[in-house]
Amino acid sequence: AKRQGRNTFQFYTAEMNAVTLEKLRLENELRHALSRKELVLHYQPQVNLQTGQVIGVEALIRWKHPTMGMVSPAKFIPLAEESGLIVPIGEWVLREACQQSIRWQEMGLPALKMSVNLSALQFKKQDVAELVRLVLEETGLAPHLLDLEFTESLVMEDTEHILAVLASLKQIGVRLSVDDFGTGYSSLSYLKRFPVDTIKIDRAFVQSVHHTQEDAMLTRAIIALAHSMNLKTVAEGVETEAQLDFLMEHQCNEVQGFYFSRPLVVQDLEQLLLQRAHF
Ligand code: C2E
Ligand code: CA
Ligand code: CA
Ligand code: CA
Image (cartoon, rainbow, N blue to C red; front, top):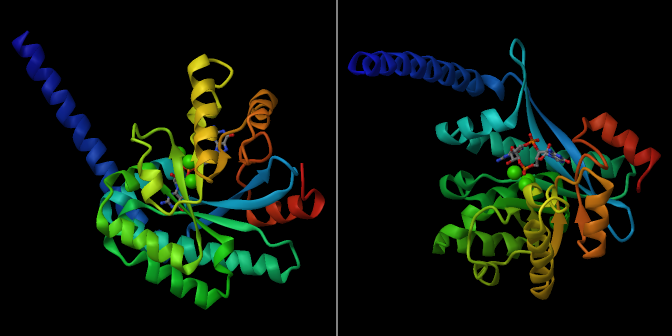
């Protein structure tokens, strides 16, 4: 057993080295991704459930690596956070998304809300409020058209600093959304303390509303709670008509998911908006 233990240990060491090396390699590649223009944004439509209209899009980052192909954000965002690269990458995302929004306005497309994901690290390592102010000024985008998404875990930290940054952002006039709501095991009391406009119900809830009674109840409760606090609800990960019916019945405000559209490249989103501005 002892020898087996040692072999196992060696096996894991070799394995870990391989994983570490792979990570280092990827991190090094990511370091150049920005300057090599390998990063691109896709946009997923958000649909108002009452009118069926596309009222906004969420910008989602993609990494087109020349040899590795498409690297999923699930893989490189954690790495970008560990290495701090999320700060310059996040800044690029914000600027690019705002510029794109203006390009659509200039094309005569109806003004859409632009949702941009912010990493917790951006709140800690840089003055996000100042950055947002600057980018809005540079691009000329109206603040109310920008919606910043941050995760529940950020507000759960509940520090004076984060509270102050969110207050400055609110002052600028942008909208604030809590992403992946329901996954953080948080007390809901923070919602009262933070100047949040919208909660995005995590797709884990949405996708199981017709499988488990508990999730259906939770989803219903989240929507009711949000509305009682004058918060808007967006359900993400809607894939089926049954999920859509459930969300409609319980008066969720907006939906996003493959049922309507996957995240699209700029041209495909433009096509969609020109052909069918509502569902
Ligand atoms: P998220 O912010 O929760 O984004 C929603 C994710 O759900 C996206 O995955 C989207 O493609 C996917 N999705 C949308 N509709 C459906 C559906 O109906 N079914 C299923 N199964 N999935 C759906 P994606 O694009 O792979 O992004 C993964 C995560 O990476 C995002 O989760 C977000 O946390 C992060 N991310 C993406 N772009 C950025 C960015 O620009 N900055 C930061 N900080 N994080 C980003
Ligand atoms: Ca998001
Ligand atoms: Ca989410
Ligand atoms: Ca998520």
